[in-house]
Image (cartoon, rainbow, N blue to C red; front, side, top):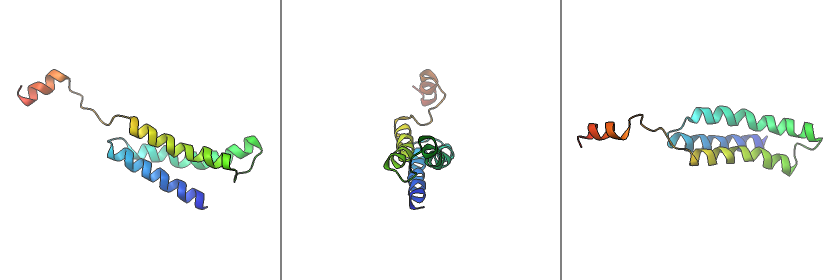
Length: 92
C-alpha cells in the first residue's frame, strides 16, 4: 500500500512540473495514475513472478521517470504567430 501512495506522490510531482512548463498536467495524471498499478498487477501475472519483486517495482517507477523526462524535454505552448506577424505587433 505504501508503494501505491509513493507512486501517486511521484505522479503528482511530475504532473506539477508538466503544468509549470505549460503542458497539460491532467493528461500526465490520467496516463500515469492507472498505468502504474496496471503494470504492478499484470507484470507478475505474465512472468509468473512476485508482485513484490525489485523488477516489478523498478518497472512501475520507470513510468513517472519517463513522464518526468518527457515533461522536461517537451516544449510548452508556443504562439501560433509567425515571425513576421509578431514583429508587426511589436511595431518593428
